[in-house]
Amino acid sequence: MERSSDSVISLRPLDISDADDFMKWYSDENVSKFCSWDAFTTKEAAIEHVANTVIPHPWYRAICLSGRPVGSISVTPFRGIDKCRAEIGYVVASEYWGKGIATAAVKMAANSVFVEWSHLDRLEAVVAVENTASQRVLEKAGFKREGVLRKYYLFKGKPTDAVIFSLLSTDPQVNYFMD
Image 1 (cartoon, rainbow, N blue to C red):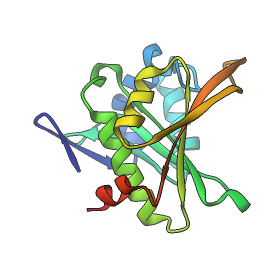
Image 2: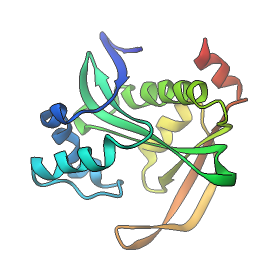
Image 3: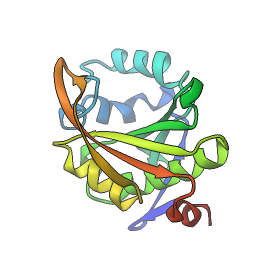
Image 4: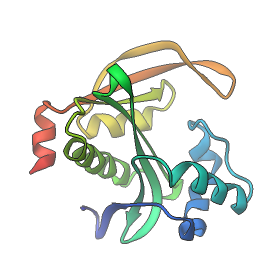
């Protein structure tokens, strides 16, 4: 757990019973602007996404502020010869931006996965070049900017440049997270 002002930040599994809370970020176009999914227009669509994608995911957590979900974070492992790597992704409801919540959540998630998955050597994040706020989150969480990947992925049908960041299990910051 971490603190942001007077509130406690924690991570826990996201559940369908959190529907009213997760609709705040799943339906927010400011949040979905840099996400692979479009803003959900109905609670039913968001619940279906949580049931079919979030709950079966190997590492997906609600980012909670004083016990209430205000966002989500996931770590997706690579497979086969790339199983030493995983990719982190996160969203926070726009009303909570700029409060250090995402940075704290990224630090907690990195700590957790490096402990839970002892085979993991590298945690990486791929962020749209235009998403400078998310880039700042990763830098404040100790990730290293490695470079720009030109036209790296299709984003909402358009080839998009991305910045890749990494945190290694051997980085000095990780030892700090583990204390």
